[in-house]
Amino acid sequence: MASTAAAQSYCSWAVRQRGLGLCGGARAVPMTPRRCFSVSAAAGFDNQNREYVIVGGGNAAGYAARTFVEHGMADGRLCIVSKEAHPSYERPALTKGYLFPPDKKPARLPGFHTCVGSGGQRQTAEWYKENGIEVLYEDPVVAFDGKTQTLKTSSGKILKYGSLIISTGCEASRLPAKIGGNLPGVHYIRDVADADSLVSSLGRAKKVVVIGGGYIGMEVAAAACGWNLDTTIIFPEDHIMPRLFTPSLAKKYEELYQQNGVKFIKGALIENLKAGSDGRVSSAVLKDGSVVEADTVIVGIGARPVIGPFEAVGVNTKVGGIEVDSLFRSIIPGIFAIGDVAAFPLKMYDRITRVEHVDHARKSAHHCVEALLTSQTKPYDYLPYFYSRVFEYEGSSRKIWWQFYGDNVGETIEVGRFDPKIATFWIDSDSRVKGVFLESGSSEEFSLLPQLAKSQPVVDKAKLKSATSVKDALEIARSSLQSGAAV
Image (cartoon, rainbow, N blue to C red):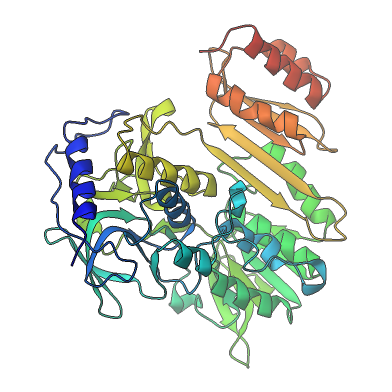
């Protein structure tokens, strides 16, 4: 017999949500009452009904689960449907510590299960069991019916949900099979299985080619240096990290990588990947006809949101992903989307966007579940944040860690010589700080960055340009906050 209390709880929440408008300037959501139905409140789930279902087993799902537990609404009520074999984990480790060679203390599960990345409890499989959360591993959703509020998994299970949170994340963009994108020795990284396969290849590799000069490319190439491998990065742009780095900033990092033996081939496109006599990849052929030998290739050319089978929920054609409002509600009552797959209103910049980053995965999950379980109507006010940590393995000549907050628009002012620090400020036409980047800062210095990007104070550009050190530049920026010139 389903729990009457559980059904009343869900119906009570549905009533509270009626009449709540949108925050953040997105499109209107129909203010229709949620459909209510009885659900099983027993941890064993003795029927097909689940009060709350999260589709996707990534980091956002894990942080959402934690928030359900904090509100006492997980036990016997929450089900997570995942394609992975493991409980959610802090995915950034896969291109960083996970790729270190065995003698340099590589990261391994269960060491980085969610939510250790934010200082929380490690959520192993036992944690989910102890908290009464049903997890369907390696059983992704293959069909969805919004009218009947049902999901079908690959094993044939039919699940009826009350509230649905789509947390399907992204998948790696792949090279076409016809040009060798699926050859043995060609790797893509999105999950532990991918990383395990790559580690196996690195253990016997001699020449590595990394395709792509973004986050994946930089982090994987740095890890390959820990294995003392002949490493080449190939990308079509003029410099690495073109979506964030200025040419001057990129040059500093390229020089550091070159000092570690990494070679760059810029402005180049892949014609195809060739196999050797053993069937494994043996070289990369470029559009200009040149050939780069490689026994291991890592492709890091971006990612795309995993929308299927939820296209009917509403896809944003400009940024991809499922469009939601500032409470992560989709156009269909009772359905939400969080993390990489969500196209949400970026309030401070007044635009719809997607953010593929662990920080947003964590925060969007928490905000969504808070809105779902309480009367919270505060709009999600996210400050874009990105970071990277590379060359952190034992024996590295220099470990580097940068952070960026805000928006990289406007005039840039660079301070420092990258030995060991460098900072870049993005300043708009009104002399307001729009974004700030810092390499090798102290914890106190890093803590200043979000304050600057959020407040967007007016700074004295002349003083900033004349600063003789990163320390002086940050002090000039700090004083602009203290002067009360913030927005």
